[in-house]
Image (tube, rainbow, N blue to C red):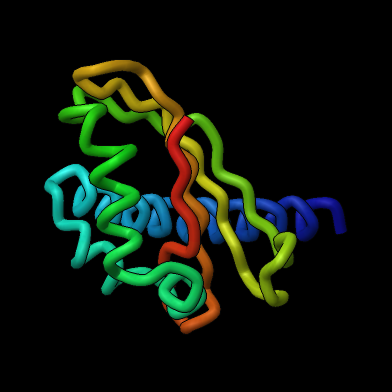
Length: 130
């Protein structure tokens, strides 16, 4: 019985790791759109919940005000990734909050990206820079 439990634990751990790794590529690809100044494209690839809360024009304006002055990304390192089934002010679902320590040309910052799987694919529903 103990070997079976161990095998199941390993299987579950591998499945979680594989999905988290896949989600990281989604997160990085989306952030790279912002890095490249592709603000409209990042808005288009975001989740419907994101788009319903923030117009394309407001998104571009916010990034031009907050993100653009930080400059180019020198390094970006994932510092955490946590899965949730609910978040305040959001419907029940699958969420992943990923934090990155990012060195921009102007300064060091922490980027927080929230992904949702409500549309069947992992998509951005939130992005914050501290």
